[in-house]
Amino acid sequence: MPDRITIVIPGKPFGKQRPKFDPRSGRAYTPDATVSFEQTVRELAAKQLTTPLEGPISMTLEAVFVPAKSWSKKRRAAALGTLHTQKPDLDNIEKAILDGLNRIAFADDQQVADVRKRKRWGEREETIVTLEVAS
Image (spheres, rainbow, N blue to C red):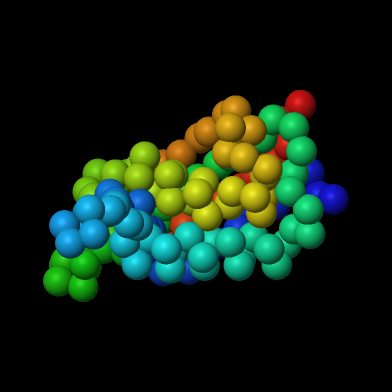
């Protein structure tokens, strides 16, 4: 079993959405986009892990966003590598990732004892997650 894995989730970083409420049934439900994203995260993690990591886990999360095509070349070049301060919120991105990794990368997300996270501008939309058994 590896002590460290890196999962690259292609596409625009996704923030977990709030539960929706169905007034007809009176029940809350998770939006389809959130369910789909978390399933993608599970599938990508399952390709690297046959059993969940054990013990305390350190997680590094990097959400990379691409500047809008409407930006000038100068503005785009200046933005690359700098911090991203627009939506989605970083904590919502983290929640979607942790929920997707539950029972695949770790038995429960309470094992994640150390988190380093950031959003930045880059050339390719992706979310890079590194999990490591903490010592």
